[in-house]
Amino acid sequence: MDASSVNWLEYYKGIANVCPWSYKSFIMGKIITIPYTDNTFMSFASAFRNCKDKDDVYTDCFVYTCKGKSVRWLESMVDEMNEEYPDAEWLYSSPDDNTGNATPIPVLIQQRKAQLEELRNKYYADETSNGDKVE
Image (cartoon, rainbow, N blue to C red; front, side, top):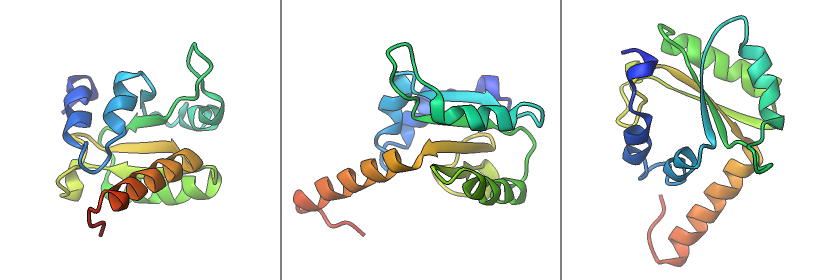
């Protein structure tokens, strides 16, 4: 599958059970999808910490589409980037990883670590305050 044929809107709707804030973030234009290239990747990764929208609000996430990259390559890049950029949280997703919520194409994901931790803490605090069991 090619990156241009991915229906990202449907993908983010579909993962709301594991990442409830991604859909809203996507429809608000705060997730930027960028094709991975060796020549420009580090420039984008470095620019992420300063990337803001027209209203001076920080972008939530860069998703780098990594056509043809293996899970092993993605894992290696995540480890390297988490070391290189400690203020970001790097994750990967790939249909080759056999998880139910995987992206339809291989991707690297760069998010603001502090913001992500805040969202997770709020989400889990809300879950426990509603009496729901959180595992």
